[in-house]
Image 1: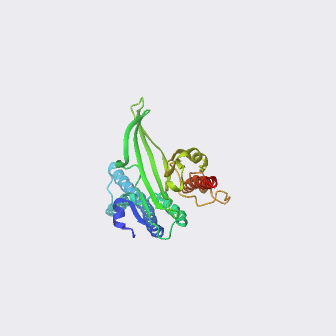
Image 2: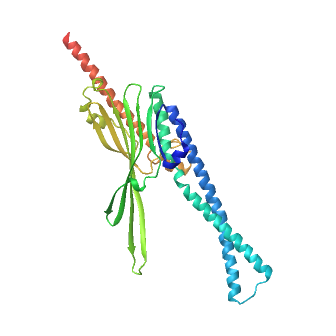
Length: 331
C-alpha cells in the first residue's frame, strides 16, 4: 500500500495490513518525509536567525540615530535622512522575513516526527520477517502525533502542589500470525504527566514552574491452540521465572490462560528503538554511550517473545512426555 502523503499530513496516523516488504516500503516513505521536514525546519531556523538578527540590529540603529538627532535637536542632511530611511526599510523587511520564517518553521512542527516510533516498527518487522510465511499479512497501526494532545488527556488532578494533566497514548500495535500458527500481538502505550505550579514571592512576582514525567508500557502476547499446549494455564510461575529482560527494564505483569500468554514491562520514557553502536564498541562517542544506557525497546520486545516461546516449548515437551507415558501405560 502506498502512503497517501496528503492524507498523512492531515492526520499523522498510519494503519495498514500487508506483507512485511510493503510495510517496510511505507515506513521508508514516512522516514523520508520526516527527514525532509527536519531539513526544512533546520534551514528555516538558520534563515530566520540570519535575517532576524541583522534586521533587528539595523532597525535598532535606525531608531537610535533618529532618536538621538531628535533629542539633540539636530537636522539631518538629505543624504543622511535618505540613508536612514533605506536602512530602516531594509532592517524592517529583514525582521519581518525572519519572523515569517520562524512562523513557517513552527507550522511544520507536526511533520517533524518522533524517529523512534516508525524506527521501532521497522526493526521489529525486519526481525519478525524470518518467522513469517512469505506473503503473511501483518497489521500495523502507528499514531505519530505527540503524546500530549488534548484528546489524549484522560484526567486532570493535583499531585502534591502540582496541577497535573495525565495523558495516555496507545500509539503502537502490531499483529500477525507466525509460521507455526501462533498469533502475535505487540503493543506499546506511553503515559505522560505534565505538571505545573505557580508561586508568588514576597516581592509580588509570580513564577510558574513546569515539568514532565512519564514512562512507556510494552506488551507482547501470543495466542495458541489449547490442544497443542495442554496445561498452559498452570505455568504462570514458570513463565515469570523464564522471563529475561534487559537491565533496568521492569516486569509489570505476567498473564497465562488456556490459550494465551502475555508479558507487560515498563520502560523509561527516554527509550530508544535500537542503539546504532554495539555496547562493547570503545570507539563509540559519548552521545552513543549515553544512548546505549537507555532502554532498548526492540531488544526488550525480542527478549519478551523469546521468553514466551520458552514457556510454550516447555508446555509442548511436557504434553508429549505425558502422552508417551500414557501410551506405555496402556501396553
